[in-house]
Amino acid sequence: MNSTVRLTTPFHSHSTTSEVIDGVDLVGRRVIVTGGASGIGAATVRALATAGAEVTIATRNPASAEPLLREFAAISGAGRVRAEAVDLADLSSVAAFARGWQGPLDVLVANAGIMAIPDRQVTAEGWELQLATNYLGHFALAVGLLGHLRAAGNARIVVVSSGAHRNAPFDFDDPQFVHRPYDRWAAYGQSKTADVLFAVGARRWATDGITANALNPGWISTNLQRHVDDATMRALGAMDEDGNIIEKPYYKTAAQGAATSVLLAASPLVEGATGRYFEDNQQAAVVLPDQADRVGGVAPHALDPHAADRLWEYATRTIH
Ligand SMILES: NC(=O)c1ccc[n+]([C@@H]2O[C@H](COP(=O)([O-])OP(=O)(O)OC[C@H]3O[C@@H](n4cnc5c(N)ncnc54)[C@H](OP(=O)(O)O)[C@@H]3O)[C@@H](O)[C@H]2O)c1
Image (cartoon, rainbow, N blue to C red; front, side, top):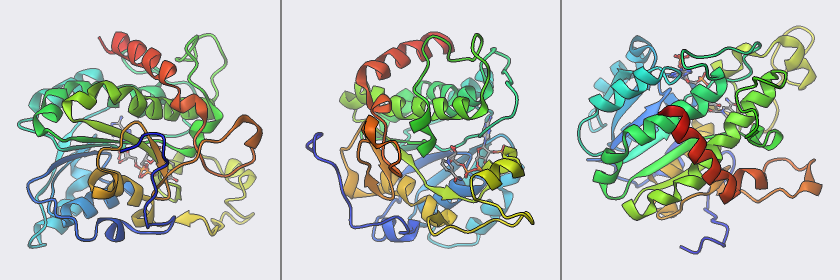
């Protein structure tokens, strides 16, 4: 695959998971979806299991996955779905999850996330909570599962980022907001830039047959917005004065929002692609500095291979 040519597919912004995975057989494939009990993650689990994959939902609270587990237990021909506990903001929990994994792992979907935590919170390790959950925990999980990804021979890592990455390059001088004032959106954006840089940095695993790509799912109404207050929702034009959500044409259902994750996890159309950023089921265009008003696209700071290597070193030091 030519890495300088932008990868396109026949799908579009409102294509669903069923459309992008139509005709793909995942029987015998083993998948982990973090945060797979709700929102975009649950839609990802549904699509991959329906195509026959054996899916493990990695969630803080396995009981929250019960409805999904029951749904799939009743569908003949679907892959087995199970739930395992992991707290991505707790390094010992991530290590325990990785230690407990047996056998090859074909796909890791790093989907779990939190957004716009109002005040700076830190984990037991002293990491800012959004960076810890959205990036460092997933990095530690992938490193912990590396032997199993290698064993699959042709594994894929899918990292769910966000268009919010465009607002915040990774701040190597103060990633944990120790010296600069905490800003919940800067912290979210930075964690999502780190997610893209993770996919870029993972090119070092290509010789093991492992590919990694990042994506923006688009705007989907989920539990993610639970920390966004009404005033911010109104300022974003997403809520009216009576507290009703204002539907915009670009809003997606969960099955549309999860389509790009599913495409990257399973479609032969992206076979061999690595270190790329997708949205609306296409590789995204790079947004240049004088195109700040442009909707969508990927910022150069998120694709910079030097920043990706520097972040890889930072994360490796941090999790050890
Ligand atoms: N919705 C959007 O418009 C949108 C836009 C751009 C990007 N995204 C990204 O899409 C991904 C999925 O979000 P969503 O919209 O589907 O929201 P969601 O329904 O809130 O899903 C997020 C999941 O992450 C899990 N999670 C949070 N903290 C965790 C932790 N410490 N350890 C393990 N799991 C944890 C949550 O589980 P709990 O039940 O335990 O909290 C939940 O299942 C996120 O990475 C988000 O940043 C979403």
